[in-house]
Length: 117
Length: 114
Image 1 (cartoon, rainbow over the protein chains, first blue to last red):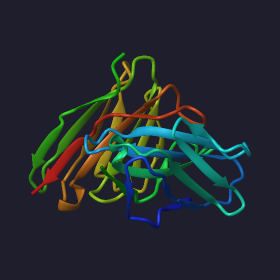
Image 2: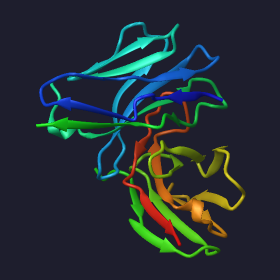
Image 3: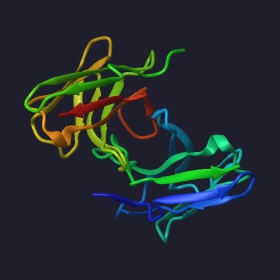
């Protein structure tokens, strides 16, 4: 079974500055997807960014970018120019690209991000 | 377009009771997944249904069951509730059942068991 580890329970960042959230995962598979989800207090889980393991280029979505290190099984999220609206719980998630395990997301425990004005 | 909807938003049950949670997927999506999120933890996969068939099941007891209807909406049923079943139950829909199809989450149902 794949395990996803987020070692930072909480992170705090000053508005307009940069914060990096770490995630490591354990898998024996070579093809998979990695995700970062954001869950604000409203509880709605929102996809932030996605990375296919076969792609060497790191994914970027506006102020959000990842550092994907496949050999190290590391997948960190960088939030640049932090905004108050970025305050939320962030979850790292893994999904296999191979049946029969390609139907479920495996989540880490989450990192709470607070943004200081 | 409406997103994933779940009902009810909150509910309180007593130990030993039964509960039914409901989920309507995004229009055109044929797959629904259920996750349990205990306070302070990440979501844990319970079930996935695709075209009304169970496609996957997580490590949950048989007290948990689900089904998907012809209109692709879904119900999650939990029998003989325990205090430990208190959690946020998330439903996610996707166009199909696997691989590259993104899962879009609903707002969840907060279940409290007393």
